[in-house]
Amino acid sequence: RSIMESPGKIFALVLVVVLPVLIAGDTCLAPDVKSNIYTTTETAMSSQTVFIVEFSLACKNKLKNVNVYADLNGKTVPASRSGDKYQVSFSDEHKKLSSGTYTVRFFDEEGYAALRKAQRGGDDTSAVKPLFTQDVVHKGASSGQYVQSEFVATSAALLVFYFAWNARSNLGA
Image: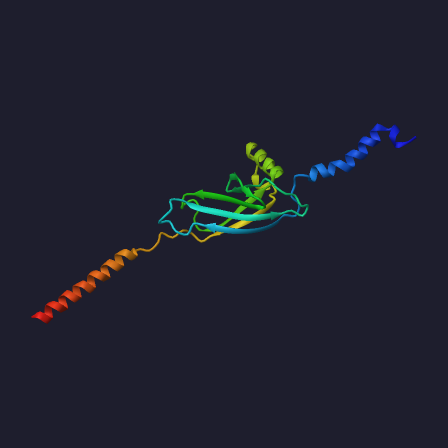
């Protein structure tokens, strides 16, 4: 009896060969991430604290154009992509994003689906394994100088003028 006479064996053989390719097709294996992080440093010119994470993503299995989602404190946003570069940003009130270290979790499509399922079901989302994580160290946003430099410059100019005027008056007397 040949293998061609048994359609069940052919199906099983095709399944064994094709299934691993289908399963690993959209999953980034062993991601290599290089990132740059920017955070708000001054509150004088902004009403919110902003975190920006720019990164490149290379997968061991050479997967390209991976859709990536980022989660910070339960707020999930898609990462924008341009070529092999990605960017994600989060913003909130200065009080809610005070100084400290924040962990941003990144997910591919499969991980994002598991995260959404956990959120809908009220389950613990920390149990969902991310594709990778990135720590954002935020040193806090300062409110700037207590005295504006324009005030200091104007005060100094007025003092110079006063002393010059006073000295001129004393010379004439």
